[in-house]
Image 1 (cartoon, one colour):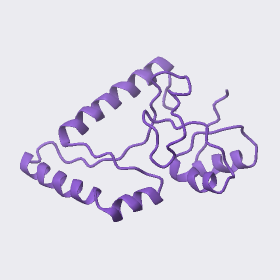
Image 2: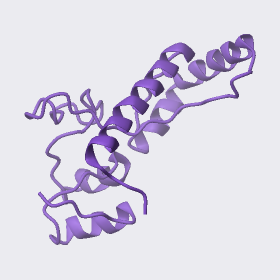
Image 3: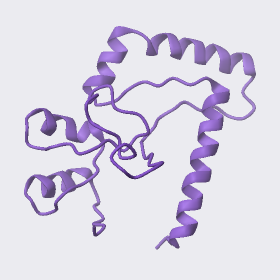
Image 4: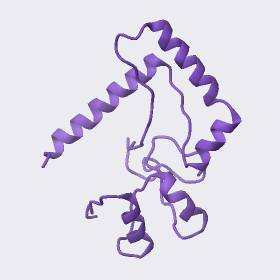
Length: 145
């Protein structure tokens, strides 16, 4: 395969749908409408776990590329000096909201899924992501222009 850099997912989606490129890896939110309408065929999801919205679609790892895990994530962070009790209160409130039917449905409509982590778990996750991507950038020789 040849990497084709795009400035936006919209441009990539246009080229996939117009058969200008054979495949792409857009964010789920950008691809779900076209998948549901039958204009795209999903081959695999890039996350470590199968998507709740596409449970019959294998992960890239299941399809044959071991240890493949590329997924976008969002989270809440606070200044390092934020008191632990404030962090705990914010986390408890957010976790409660994240379990509501309206919140889950809103995420699903946007092609997203909630996977709430506590503050310590999320901190460890961020550290592992930084290590993984830092290693990849160094090994690739990529440089900023």
